[in-house]
Structures are given as C-alpha cells and as structure tokens.
Length: 125
Image 1 (spheres, rainbow, N blue to C red):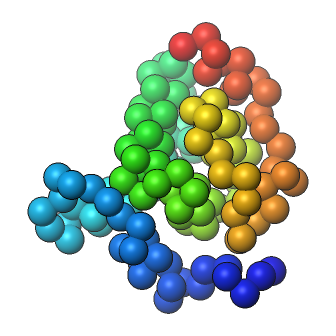
Image 2: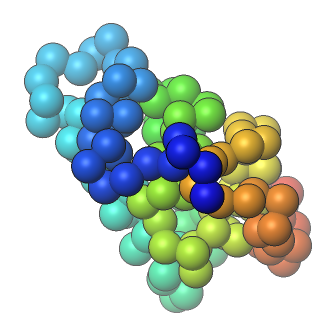
C-alpha cells in the first residue's frame, strides 16, 4: 500500500474536493450522487430481470459519477467504496466506457480481471 491510499476519514474530503457539478445547489445533491454507488452495488448483485436494461442503468450511473467527480477520482471513489467482489464487473463497465483509470492507489488494477461475458453483453447494447 502507498502513502496516498485513502482512509475512511479522508474519503469524504477527497470526494468533496473532486466534486464538480454546476447544477448542484446543496450538499444533499452531493450525497445523492454518492448514493449512486449503493444503487450500482444493488444492480450488480441482481441476477434477474432484463440484463440489457440493468446494464444500461449501470452505465448511466457510472457516466454520471465520472462526469461529476472526474475520471481518475471517480474510478478511485468507485473502487474504494465497492467491495472486491464487484471489482471485476466494475473494471469491465469502466473499460467499456473508456473511462478506466490506469492507476488507482487502493488496488492494483492490472490484477483485476475483466468479465469477458459481460463485455460481450455490453457490445450488443
């Protein structure tokens, strides 16, 4: 681990420093955007329903998060807040969107394998 790895105490400060949403008029909107990570976890955990619709919802949340936090900080926030069991899916979605940061201090992104079946599903959207 490196010295610049986030701790739980530093996470909120890091998130606030990198939050850039011109339409944001309150702290409540900032927390609503951070809550998208919870929605992502639920969607990634769900196996039922329309896979295409689920994938589109996940992509929409990821696009919003990388837009309001930026690509590198957004990826860092996502990998920090999501359990390791979601990292494979997360890397695949971010790669598909071409917004995958090459370096994330909290994890060695090169060791996270992509989900090739999911990548094929995404290419069919």
